[in-house]
Image (cartoon, rainbow, N blue to C red; front, side, top):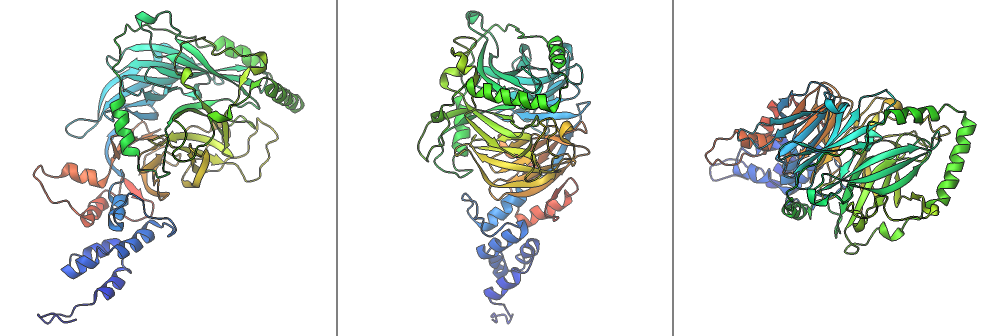
Length: 586
């Protein structure tokens, strides 16, 4: 084609064919040449092809249902990932083990081997994060703090720790701290310590206890505890037994968490998130004025542990096999039958809201390889009623699990999606077809970490596992790698000195976040998923923001035209030293 000025122009179809053979950054630069090329550079067919090739997504995977165009979807995955390091917090003096945001996103807490729990402010005008409070738990004979969680209205903080004691000690404690004046409200024993503990609602938390009844057979008891006592309610129970569950083959219940599963009419990951998160923010109830009274439900239990260890003396494999057989027979005879109606998956639009207690457990070996699910009924939500729960006959000594999901590997982390519809599970797989003959010798575990996705509505594993992160410790040294889930992304730590971010819809790894040692925990801000924190054995907490948010924070105060994907690419290239794309590109 020849223009009036005598210039030769290429047909749009030929320009499009050329652009299809260029990388995305070259297409954007070419679009600045003239109006014709600019129009072709925004072609939806072009960006569909660029999207699938750049992110290496199978063409069978559809575009996200909330996306309005292929160009904007490409830009979202490129420009809105919190992969630029903007701040490093060095106030901890030892390994940082866990991070937790408040529900509003205005605060977060951190736990560390330095035995402190620290609170941080995320709402400073300059955009930097600052320390607002630090509490040491050494005075309570804690070795370190390992986990924390804000209650639903962000007025109380649950802090879980590990007692100082002999190497084989498994005892820990949960403390509740008021966020109004940072006073300690209560302490509750927690055994084993990797039960961690969690909130059931604004005022009640769940802890664990463990009783060995043989060399490899034990009983886990899960307790509901009031976070504090009001003067007006001194005669009301502060604890109530929730469940009593038999463990075989040296397994125990660990890593408890609560999922409030609402009725979902669609399997989409996004459609009802905004409405639910807004409802959750508006739900907060006014806390009644109360006079805090400290209560301690048990000491460290070191003498009891020594007695148990003495009782669980070394015996031969034949005796252990007999014990396991007897435990199974006794368990079948004295376990309350599950109520199938409590856990049955429901069809879309049917059923009711359900509250599930989730935890890791096992049946073949001591390493956690199963997800146990137990429904908590409405009448179990408070400590009113008998301390030991409803009366039961001798034939119903133990509670049964409502549902069990086998992961076929060592579970090292779990996290819920914001709407509690999906459970994400970090695990290190066992060899295919392996047979466990000795419960004390579990199979070797893979260095690759698999990230499973479980739909809590259908109670089935969905899609293929996500994979990119790695771990290297053997079974007996394996430790927890905390993960977190936002509206669009899922992130996890790893032992390979990096954190990782995946897109939930496309199941692709988008970024690696560098540290100098093992990354133990990551946390998205619930108020802004373009803000991510990572905690490491290098004793630091790193703050990561998206290129888009970083650009907005550095923009002048006067209104300016939004910068496009080209300028984003140029800016992101300057920051590639702190975080890298998994595709090996800027």
